[in-house]
Image (cartoon, rainbow, N blue to C red):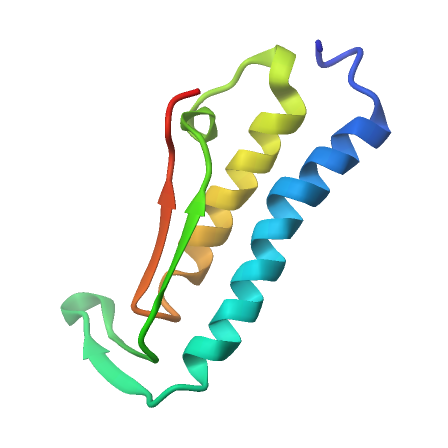
Length: 102
């Protein structure tokens, strides 16, 4: 559907499922990881982080790096997932984003 024809409700639903869903699940898993024995990791010039053991892997899309006007809701949600992964990556040992091609 083109950008101009995208309905607000449809846009909200896609963001709710993809972006907010990844946020809520990541937040819940981070609580479990952070409740474990903490360890400090020296990242050299990037500083020292403290975290538990575990991994969070968000599955996004190659569309997170591109743009197609006909998929504005989907692409926006995948960009949001990539931003979430980058923003939270310093808090735990492994926080990755997989971006398969469609």
